[in-house]
Image 1 (tube, rainbow, N blue to C red):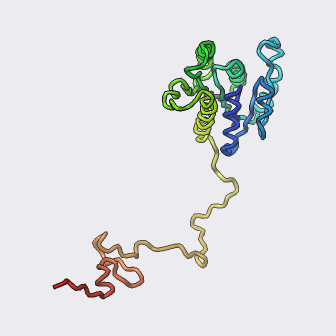
Image 2 (image 1 turned 180 degrees about the horizontal axis):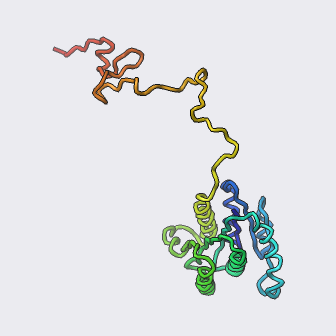
Image 3 (image 1 turned 30 degrees about the vertical axis):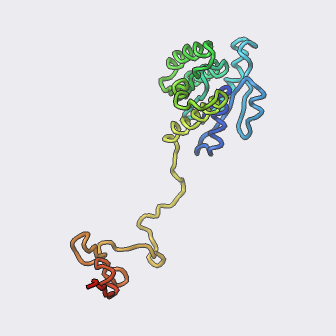
Length: 242
């Protein structure tokens, strides 16, 4: 499995996934057009993307396609994570998924929609990109940050963006977890192969009396009938006070 965080929100989400320990068999990559933002990400593969206006489409996507195709042969599932209102996240996420679909790869996207205080331009961009995204793959999961913000009225705008990235990260882990192969190759099957000489934890439960709980023999522990009151078992005389 490959998780690609695109743009600032996607990059932070991918980094949070790494901090949470990731998942077995999961590779993580961050792509952004902001070199400074990539410089703050440690321990992950990073790819610097050109700005949208810098190059024509063929030149702009050449390095991106080559980087993706290097991962495709051993890939079973691609997950793209981004904030859909940002220029980089919106533009390159769509191209990554288009290229994956051209190679008949199973792919999905988890995207954060803009907050209520974000510019109208971001809302418009995200709305248009969402339509394109759903044409590429039906496996799209949304985080409606505008609605989530109503649940945390005490949060500042500066706190809202890291919070959205953490939501993206946790949602990504939950989405990918069912695809993890938890089998342990090479592990010997231990069932029915117990060494009786060293086995000290096996009890024959049908031989244990259940007492009043099953209407059978009294429950006993070290020879004491635990179904009797403690005063009777310990032979303690209770003065009725008469």
